[in-house]
Structure formats: structure tokens, C-alpha cells
Amino acid sequence: MRRLNIPLAGSLSIRLERRPELSRARSALVTLLFLAMAFLLSGAIFQLLGYGALEIYSAFGRSVLSPTMVEEIFRKSTPIILAAIGLSYSYRLNFWNIGAEGQLYMGMIAATGVVVLNYGGILPGGPLLLLLAVAASALAGGLWSLIPAALKIRVGANEIITTLMLNYTAILLADYLVHGPWKDPTGYGFAQTIPFPPEAKLAPPGTPEWAVFLAVSAACALTTLLVFNYTVFGFESKVVGLNPYASRYAGIRTGSVVLKGVLISGMLAGLAGLVVAGNLIGRLRPGASPGYGYHAIIAALLGGLNPITVSFSSLLFGMLLTSGDVLQASIQMPRAGVKIIIAMIFITTILAEFWKRHRLRIARRGGGGG
Image (cartoon, rainbow, N blue to C red; front, side, top):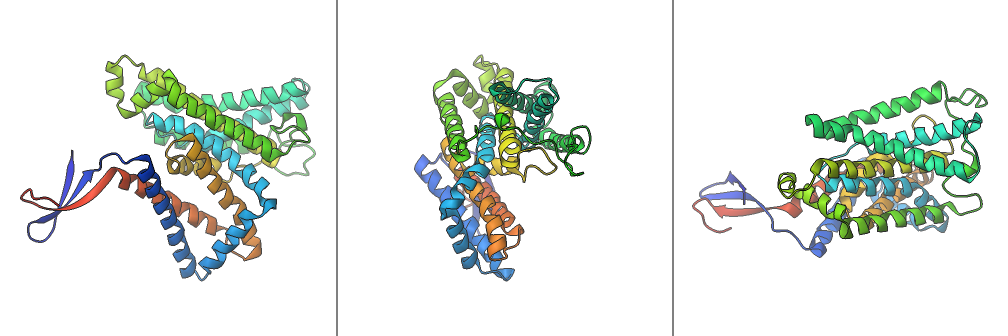
């Protein structure tokens, strides 16, 4: 076990050691404690800025418990759930995909492209249009995610840098399309595309959106749980993530496993793009995503890459995004307030993962116990 020794006064020193693996119950308890710390730190910041933390949190509780807000919470949580479950495939492989936002934008672009082609009479309408939009959005997100995966496998490029750079490429491509060739000619000069017809939306007309979104999210979570626990690919992805070098000696084609996992990751993010453009907004426009792909990164880590807990952590971010608009109007909380809470959750999530893996011990430098 590797150790980091920091000398103290006399013969004492602080040792940073690898901690034995925690049980699931203790790991969940650590996560919850650090999550509570995030809200405490956020409350302290609100107090320093002159806002009442108790007033903000009580208003937050009232807003998320309101029956009228439940549907909106599910609507805003769904793209985060889909993208976060997708990221679980990548992170399980130790492929640090930061590109869910760009893959989500590519899904929006592809789905909008299907609608534009249908508007021009090139593609048919009816139920087939939704199937084409689903296939196009998932395929676009998946192919976009394969670019950094191929670069990592072939030339060893750092996936954090390449996925992050491709985010900006996808966002700028969407901006070009809505300002240029796909701009709605009847949109009074606004930079936006034509609206999605009802048959191109994920929720059929007359069906409650939140129920459809809940069903889709639950299906993705349960399918992912089965894939992780009961398939050959799930076993291989776990082995590759733990030790890619040993997995090669075991006969596992690591490159193929990584490509499959990253492809699924991008496809789910692309499908999230269809939800955003088709249902949440109804068309493609600049700044269509308020950072759903980035929130999904924190949700995936906070949920421990388990699709069930990842879904619940994504709901937390849906609550924060939904209540932020309400609190801004009701108690004049600044828009940055929600960003402060999300930033604190991100920081404490990283600290929680570090705490689960390491421990500090005070010991004598001569070899005595701590």
C-alpha cells in the first residue's frame, strides 16, 4: 500500500493511505454526509452575501413539494438522467467523458435535421417521423462520442481535452444552423428553427409528458443495471476499468469494449438532446441546453455510477434547476444561487470520493502505529 508521509513536530508524521474498500452502506452514508455539507456551505455563502439561507431552503422545499412542480421537475430531470446514465458506461471504463453536453447538442441538431427534412417534403411524417428522430439523435450523439474514443485508442489523446473541445464545436455548429440555413423564415427574425411537429416529439399528443419521461428514464436505468450485472459486456467493461493491462492479458479486446461503452454513452446523451429540443423547448435555438450535459457529470459521480442512484441524483439537479426559476421570482434569489449549490455539490462529491479511497493517520516515523 503506497503512503504519503508528511512530517510533524518530533517523531510524528501524517500518513495518507489507501483505505480498504467501504461497504455499500458506508459508502452511501459518506456520500450523504458530504452532500449535506454542500448545502451547509452553500447556506454559509448565502448568509455572507446577505441572503437568508433558511428562507431560501424553506422556499426551495415548498417549491419542489408543490404538486404543480412535479411535472416540471421530471421534465428537466429527464435529459440529465439519460446523459448521466450514459456517462456511467464511459466512467465505468475509466474513460473520462466530459463531452455529454456536445453529444446532447449533436442529438438536438440531428433531430432538428429530421424535422427540417420533413418540412421540406423529403422525409415522411406520421409515427415514422418520431422513429427517425430517435434514431438520428442517438446515432449523432454516439458517433460524436466515438471521435475522442478513437483518438485515445489510436494515438493516446487525452479524452478530457478532446471531449471538452468537441462540446464547443457542437454548440457553435448549432448556433451557425439556427442563425443561418435552418433559421425559421416565419420566426420574426429570431434565431430559431421551425417548431417540432407533435408527431416528432417523444411524448405523443394527449399523453402526460412526465409519465412518458418517467417510463423512458426507468427503462434506461433498469436496462443499464441488467447490462452491468448480467452481460458479458458488463463484466468486460468492469475488468477493463479496473485494470486495462491485465484485461488484455486475459484476452479481452479492450479497444472494442471502450468503443462500445463510449458509443452507448453518446447515444443516450443524443437521445437527451431530442428530449430537450423536441419537448422541453419545441425547437432548436441558441443556448438550448442550460448545461444538462455538465450537470450529468456530477449526477453520475454523485450516484456512484449505479443507474438507479444516478437517476435519483439527477432528480436532485432537476429540482434545483426548476426551483431556481421559482425562487428568483418569489424571494428575489439571484440566478447564481443555484449555480453556487451545484458548484458546492461538485466539490463535495470529489472530496467524498477521495475520502472513500484514502485515510489520514498520525504515526511515529520510527514505524509505530497511528
